[in-house]
Length: 186
Image 1 (cartoon, rainbow, N blue to C red):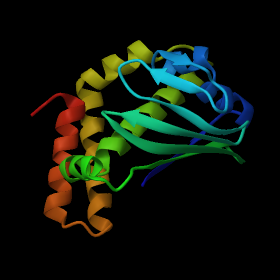
Image 2: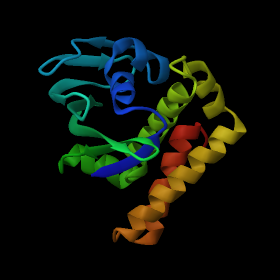
Image 3: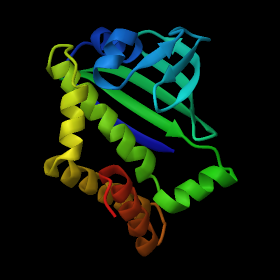
């Protein structure tokens, strides 16, 4: 299970529409298609597909995440907090051979860094009052500042992996492979 949270300076209703409406998703995450309601199916171009298994606006969204032949589960909750709205994402991976091999190669950072990028894009979208941040995000990720941040996130996920009981050497090796993957280096 990978869990990440972030507070956004907006209302619960606005944050909900940012993560559930096609036009808004495409401004911070990527091109999507599908039926965006409970029981519907979605597809994210060059990424994942899945089913919307539960939808309780503006509080909870649960989906399957089908990527690389594997199915996992994502649950997003949104709560009102003092500074805006708190989004908490939980991505649960099944304990099977394919996921175990992926986990052994990349550790939690493979999933964690991907969601860190998504949450950063969502933050930019909220801060820019709903404008698209896709091109700016791609430029940032390809530049030295973005690559430095991606390496830092990968290292932090590696440290969390070690704190969870994985031998430090192994955890940091998975973090290094994750950084190489996201930066295109190595």
